[in-house]
Image 1 (spheres, rainbow, N blue to C red):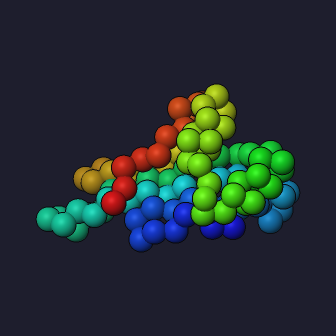
Image 2: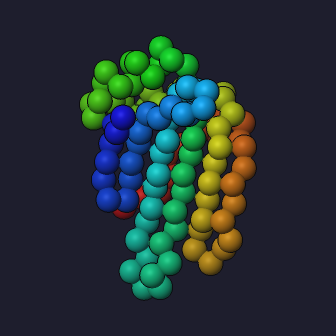
Length: 102
């Protein structure tokens, strides 16, 4: 379920097809007008079923600060592909943020 969908920023509630675990999927990208190598960032935050229901009900009116609060002390998957660097994927404890985007 898409909560926000812009060309360089999106937030969705998804569920694993195998186990049903819900998570928030966030994608952020900034446009590199000079070099054409757009930095991209993504985050996957596991959430509880009741939290998924609340976020889906809010739809595009979702309060992004609420999602940041959910991830404040939780482990989440962080994916980063900054300009001029190789892609990294790692588990991070807490500190769920909205990465730079256009």
